[in-house]
Length: 241
Image (cartoon, rainbow, N blue to C red; front, side):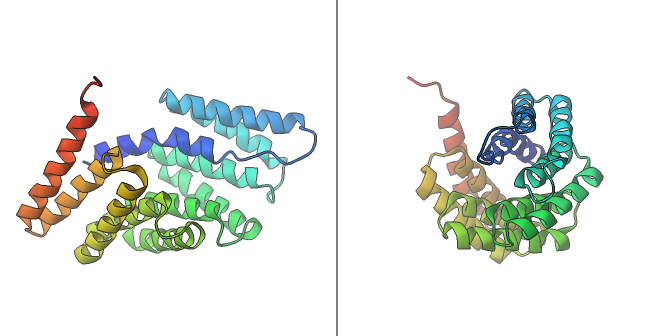
């Protein structure tokens, strides 16, 4: 299941990178502004092709351009974050972590500690620590990201559901099954309300919850949730009529 989860996660990277490009500052566009935007767009296109070499090259170039903008320009922190995301996706954790940490420090100073960009970087840094097995480092980052999103977006936003699901997965690994169950159930409820009960994420999260129930010896509940997940997957795979 870890491989499946990573594959699904990687499918979201292109959308993530495109979402965090942001608007260019007002005023006449400078050549560097356009060059930076072009490099970020090229990275997104490369990721959609699963071409991580080209994506990394484009983001290294974007970061070099962003250095001329100065550390107080949000594009500089975004460039650091996105390159860190690529390194993490490639399993190059020793390169990813310092980029995430540097981006986070800049974002907290320039944007404020409650900014949604801070929540995103905290979430992805937590994911890195989780993949490294550093659960004690991952948990406070996941919790802080969740708190920011709840304050800024409200308790029923889909991004809050993502944070809840991520934290639930970590707590399950830590053996905190009661907390993990409550958070997972809340995440599923939010997602069903916002995206519909047949959304592909709902199926995945239902299946993950069924694994938690199996670990607890709650086999009847596990079977029920797994059956729901598999039914959704079958419906999603069926050709449209």
